[in-house]
Length: 185
Image (cartoon, rainbow, N blue to C red; front, top):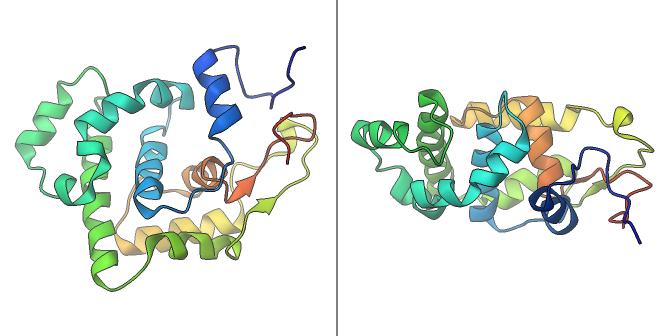
């Protein structure tokens, strides 16, 4: 029996595994949300499969996305990462993860909860859409625009409204599995 998946999923087993077991599943852990937000920012201008295949390399290169360790990265670390063939070697994207780690820490030091902050953009529970096909799925929404604006105000970057919407889909804030998809709840 062939499973029907969302139309964006290729035949690549890594992509299928991601779609079937990760994409759209609610994530509440603040560190996991931080990592996924950083990874979605790395996707800018690229396909998600490119970043997905490099995810383990990113985890190794960026201290398993420990924001306290990343925030201490120096210009020498940036230069080292620019030579790392396991990640996207784009200086601005590398620097964005460091910048985002510092913004994350500053946010926490003000006594805030990162997970609660992000989930407030969808009222604390997943938005379940009823799309029939991929052509109906938006690339951004008022919620992703608001999230983008708020994150930028906090000092995050590579968090435009399209990246924020992809992030919201990935972490289950939005369930955009189309109606024919077997993952539909």
